[in-house]
Each structure stands twice: as C-alpha cells, then as structure tokens.
Amino acid sequence: MGKTFVCSLCRNGIIGGGLYIDEQSITYSTQKLTVSPLYRNLVLPMNEIRELSWSQMVVPVAAISMK
Image: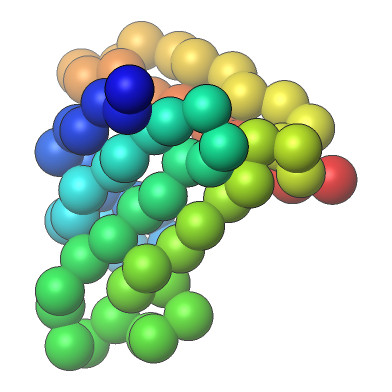
C-alpha cells in the first residue's frame, strides 16, 4: 500500500505538490499550470533510483539520484 505526502520540488524555484510512494515508484504531481508538463506528473521508478539521501533543515529534505 502506498503513502501520500505534501511536498515541494526544488527545481528552478520551489514548486508545491504531492508525493506518492509505493513499491514500484515515487511519483510527484502538481496541478500548477506554470510548471512544465515534464514535472507535473513526474514518475521515478524504484529500479532506476540509484540513491536516496535525507537531511534535516527546517523541514526534512530528500535528494533522489537517478541511474
């Protein structure tokens, strides 16, 4: 069963949206029309993720590196 989170994507600024994580992928989605269609529904398959690292600033920050 997947988990859903509120999050922000940092790519040329901060873009609010949602994050859905399940066994197959991590999916970021936003409905903002000012965001490129490439990032509005971004699916990162688990088998293509090389590294996931976490740090703590004011809020938790995750960095995902793809293969």
